[in-house]
Image 1 (cartoon, rainbow, N blue to C red):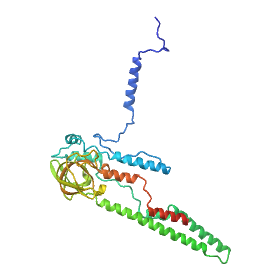
Image 2 (cartoon, helix red, strand yellow):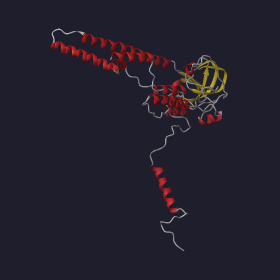
Image 3 (cartoon, rainbow, N blue to C red):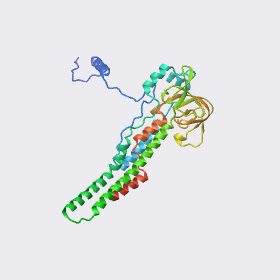
Image 4 (cartoon, helix red, strand yellow):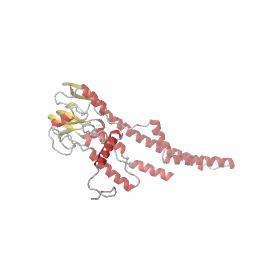
Length: 334
């Protein structure tokens, strides 16, 4: 009977080798610092809206990127909380439809998820935006052209006794063009900023909730996941909410989707699409009639409005027709 040499193949694995490999893997998993982040909390909620970087080098790539962004946004607004049975939803969010959350729970959730506000990008000071419009882009070339005109006029004045004023006039004309176009662009940009500030003032300020079995009014920014909210006629809805009790309840969704007619809402699950089902209402919309009771399923940047705002901030803004005309004019002048 011949022995199996180390170079011969054996059908039976080396048990000692397997144990050694298992011990090595267990040790590696125990000491490894890198943990996979699935971008979800312990209860399955999305923590943040994340983007996958995509090249924007060519016009065709830009169109593909825009299509990708729209598909990404559609997937991000894919909400499943309206399909879940209510008792499962209450258990998942650790709340009770009659007594609501306890104050200790509220503090812990608020510390985990943050305030119920939509993040806004850092705005540059007014003087910085004005200087950017006056000196940025092609305006810089026009300023350079005006400087060369003045320099040429100055040199000719030192050489010749009589110098034509063409360069001097052209230099001042370029400066006037830069000031007019830059001021116009700044005014348009400032109007957009004012419109955004006016929209921010329209966001909800107060909400009626049940906590520790007591109905109370809190600041909208203090709403947390799992809060039981009572909505009355005239209230602005302060979060994305799953409705479970209603009476003649209608909402105005014009701030969200432009729908002009108030929509009936009830506790019934009527559509797979979260934006079309009857048992969900959304942040910043209005209750125009009736009464409802619901549970908060999303706050802050994770609301539908918050995700749309994040998309609009991150997505490249298209140039308006008036901006194109101004740019073409500056190209011609320069």
